Image (cartoon, rainbow over all chains, first blue to last red; front, top):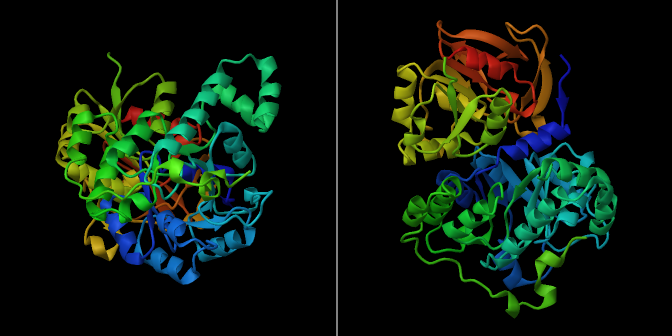
Length: 295
Length: 194
């Protein structure tokens, strides 16, 4: 029997398993255990959550392998970790450590101002952020097995995630209604691979899982993204920067499963303690906007 | 004869792919999130996803006992990957901080979680399956194996010497993901068990 590893089907198939679930940012093994106990489908291991990266400034890089190994050993659920945009050596290191998914993330300081990682070369699957459909399709063209909205990480403000979700899903609906002879021009305008535009026209969805991320802080935020037709949710600073992470984590997990059931949403939204303090986008300078990183 | 209605447990995971595969076979499918959604079903599929997440949500929304009753009153159940873990009487590889992991404890078998390793060890391979004429392309993703089965359990396939597909009466369990390949032969096998 010839077994194959690292195929596109194994990478995108793994991504399918995260649908209807919540992936939580954690910075210690202890937080990873709390996230697993709250029902997270995976944890994202990093040294500082985006809210702290914003506050501290400086260059944000891949986490130290010691802390990633600590988290790999602490939980039985999949572990993701972030590399800087274009930093394929950080990605080689994470693959060697046995990380289950790599996020090539705008939350870290970009390592390359023109190019992203060529992701087909890796056995481990990648997730990438996108603000619009063109960006999503370029990342899929490079081999991304999962797409997430960029939103604006570390703000606790869902408005950018909503903007990106509406932009991606709106463009998909529009491509579905265009006649075949217009699709090459659509691909040109989107700066996206033609074959992927054809796929969208035929199937009305991305060829990979499409998650929501960037500013999700409450169960209602998470359910909002699910009702907009996203496949699942990443919560960054929103859980462990709040007053009662365990309770809030659990509530967001329940809200993503029962996103269409307002009675359950009302119940899980009740009495969660302090949410993370949010940032209004109009108080952020352009250079503080993480979503604008990536090309 | 009226068409059977099949439920897919939709707490989390790859429930949509099972739904689409069944719909291609012209089967009526409903998503199950609460006990009331089990009404009128003749079969239930527990999909792949994260077994700890699904187990918790089954406890939180009181699904364990209703699904056991569904099984004892003749309903067929198929668990794939995480679903196989949730059917097992014994689970190995549970994080120590959990103590035990919630399960339906319906099938007399011992399942080991993440038995082939992490995602970089995931693989696909053609599999000989008892009753199928040609191999089934099986996708194993951080897959469990069935380490041991009771005498009433019929082993239908093995990969790398480990049990990966088994049946006991109206219970079916697979450690791989037939919903990801577009091959509906195992879905047809499940429908024949109803």
